[in-house]
Amino acid sequence: MSSTAGQVIKCRAAVAWEAGKPLVIEEVEVAPPQANEVRIKILFNALCHSDVYFWEAKGQTPLFPRILGHEAGGVVESVGEGVTELKPGDHVLPCFTGECGDCRHCHSEESNLCETLRFNTDRGVMLNDGKTRFSKNGQPIYHFLGTSTFSEYTVVHVGCAAKINPEAPLDKVCVLSCGVSTGMGATLNVAKPEKGQSVAVFGLGTVGLAACEGARMAGAGRIIGVDLNPGRFNEAKKFGVTDFVNPKDHDKPVQEVIAEMTDGGVDRAVECTGSFKAMIQAFECVHDGWGVAVLVGVPGNDDAFTTHPMNFLNERTLKGTAFGNYKPRTDLPTQVEKYMKKELEVEKFITHSVPFSEINKAFDYLLKGQSIRCIIRMEA
Image (cartoon, rainbow, N blue to C red; front, side):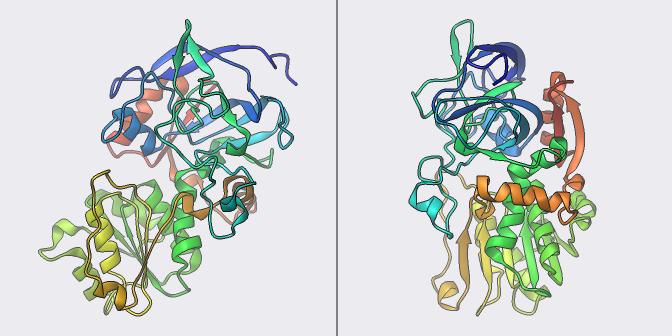
């Protein structure tokens, strides 16, 4: 154990005190890990749009003050009682959804939705005792997605930390702990296009570009990117996109446009926007008989998916996925090894880098649509 094991650690954290206001770098206290928990020294973060969404607190119950962050890499500082899978010094990727290893979902090859550690955006405390591990001057500061990586030290459930190859560069592979794996897995693990087939991807943010990359890796013959921002097409070409469709350029539904482009519809479609209209378009643009559409984006609470039942009876398939169907502790180490063997590219997702003290710049880049992934260097 480290010299700080069992002690409260004082460190810097970027605290969201209220919705939409710039994060404030504060000195906070981080309590030691309790049973089945680990305390991690975070070295690198990548800013995900989910962090921005919950920082803005649009469409969900606000919970502040809070330490956001869930796409990161770090080193285990100490472990709590009962932890045998990890030890101090291990390199890990914290993950917003966990893998307890004991429940029906963890035992199933068809699911990654752990009953105990499934992602929960409303919970701001640890499962063990219903309390936070963060505080400032005695005031509790809430957790986010069980990770709260915008802190130099954080505490997570052991089932939410994937042990990886210590030789892997954390400033690169940290992006695998959320968005890149989510999009890539949606294509490779769920849509499963065959070589030469056509794939349409709705939304060309990080998750969408990762879905395109998955289609490229699968050998798709045609990858159609659908986005309202024409400025994203040139960037999307790096991820295998061959055609770009901007719905605003057409006077007919985009699913009809795609059907005309592809002789009846694409073989696979992946929706990565969270817009229920895009979800319907993605489903209705796949070919009858064998077309498969996969929903990745998270819709609003009151959204409703409506389509004619004949679309199903004509043998179109609709699926959904969380985290690309990857089991975090089982599959993330394998993803990292693929990167180490140059079978997986992550550098092209990384467009910016800022020191921790300038974390609000990362938010600005993302809000202005200038970045795909911005790395936040915690020690800078």
